[in-house]
Length: 237
Image (spheres, rainbow, N blue to C red):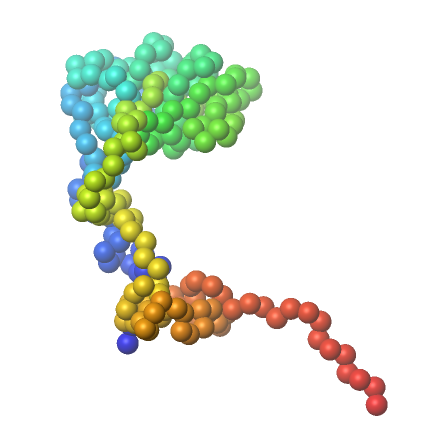
């Protein structure tokens, strides 16, 4: 008797469950309209590609995504009157055209949804009834003028250039984000691991399609094709 496929095991609390107890916490813009803080520490979060900065606002420590060039002891500001310096957070209506920004809100007050991975940034393209930004993918997006963003390019831009060097590093890096580090074809597995496994050589020894009437959890992969063409007309006698 085999076991469930990897696609069926996702989200069920097994080996693919994200180890949130090791993560540093949520990273969102503060809901205050204006304020100043000081960078206390720059830390690493196992579940993120970008480094984080611990900021002290009055008597509260808050996490923010660290832009490139941010230093311990540096002062950062939130609000419309903040200067256009790296690490400061402003409404996008106040940010000049051509400025690189990150951690951009999709709707005013949601804390930041776009451009949060290492080495990325978006560009302010134009202002009008809405502000147009260009995302790292090249896509243009129109946003509410009151959406906030942080100035600068996110640190950690060289992470793709450094190789993992060995399989163990890749395994632990991907496990922190509840992802698979390696992909193995079904025909390369044993019969207990996959329906396509086993045999004297790699081949699919059984039908590779799944019935459209299969129960939930088993209905994964290639579904059986639908019948095509018109039904034949009955001949007249």
